[in-house]
Length: 205
Image (cartoon, rainbow, N blue to C red):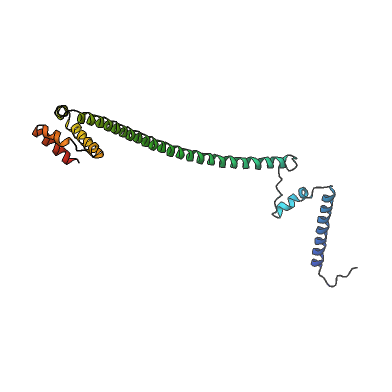
């Protein structure tokens, strides 16, 4: 009879039960390894009793296309994100294009206004030059005729036209180093008209 060195009966029973459990577990693991039984399925009631849940079975784990589906799913998500980014960029580009178009329209309006002002200015300059040419020619005609006849013609003109001819006549006489006939013409005019012309000439040199 074996001697356990003074170990109590209860302790010996516990050790034997523990040894049996270890042998059972080892056997189950070995049989599961060689494929005779499914240890997880066999021990599932015991695991449930001790509070360990049965591992959740992953559906389609043996599906050969699972990885391909996951890869395609990832690609679809990436494409969706890329499309969203492109949509945002497109909206920003459209917004900038609208701002540029508005600025271009404002610049075009300003350029058009400047062109119109320049055209108007050129037309006024041309009209002034044409008027000056006509005044110079009229002044030469009047200077070349008898003063009495020149005064009769001048009296039928507006005051501003007479004043302009007087000034042109004085300028041309100064260039030629001659005496202007303006003073003589004024002396041949009616006093009231001559005084009015001199008053206006003095007011606008």
